[in-house]
Amino acid sequence: MNPRRRATAIAVVGTAVGATGLGVLAAPAGAGTDPDLPPVEAQALVESVLRADVPALSGTVGLDNGLDLAALPGLSALNSESARVFHDGEGHSRVALERERGELTAVLGEDALWTYESGAESATRVDIPRGEHHRSPGAGRDVADPTALARQFVAGARENSTVSVDGTATVADRPAYELVLNPRPDERTLLREVRVAVDEQTRMPLRLSVFTHDTTEPALEVGFDDLDLGAQPAHLFEFDPPEGVDVESVNPGEKGTRPDTEGSEHRPVETVGDGWDTVLLTRLPEGALRQGSDASGPTDAGSPAGAGTARDLLRQVGERVTGPYGSGHLITTGAVTALVTDDGRVAVGAVPEPVLAEALGAR
Image (cartoon, rainbow, N blue to C red; front, side):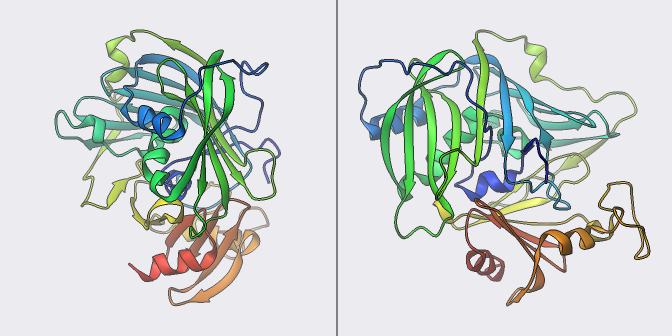
């Protein structure tokens, strides 16, 4: 397990809790005396979050979580502790995640979503119809953007939740309301509540925190550590691949799927269900279960300890299971369950195993 509890920025986890995502266990920047703000009704706050335009801004986002799912092969996990986020106020954005092996950059421009990892020799371009950038798939960029994550969650889970306002907070030196969403009793989820810190002035989400049962600290959280509102240079929302880098063009796919673009490991991602019961389905890259768990390349069954295949790693961290989907390994945490089948299918959600099995059986 990673003692630093780095962020496992998995698009699947975001989708699993209502098309949204993860974060930080540290105290938020600017924590202190809660600000005194005018009262606001919960539903009115929800509507203002969904209507609010994201202004031009730049900010540093803190990332951390306790799920430790980064070891799962082929889930395009991003081990990051911080990110830089930029918006131009017109629907374009840029997210740069710092990782051990280089920076992962995602740029949403006018007609394309680019992802590029500095340590790799490839980039991915997802074409977007002109003028439709605001509807583009989230991919890895949204996992590090608390504004995008929280708005996706509120939009996806509000019909299946009870909502309330529980006081105020200070995030990145800005006063905010604490919007709380709790799953309705018939929702099959491992989560107890999700809190969204909503900026009092702009109504944009500043932080999203995910809580499980019997815990007092968030299992997942993503939030701004610092935030500056104001115009951003136009070149930040354009991307030109470095010379010599291979560019992969991706078809966003049919309705119901979305690209989870991260370099050459692009795989379609599909969601089953809605609200808190949402399950994300994808498939491992070809040969992923034969790849060495130390990411050094393929190994054989006689490899020394520490350099086994990804299938060997699954045997160590998961429980062997069988069902209508066939057989595979089940990995559980307090907030997320993942099922990896022997033929490379993956189901992930903030739900118990039977819900994952149903989702796999539905496809």
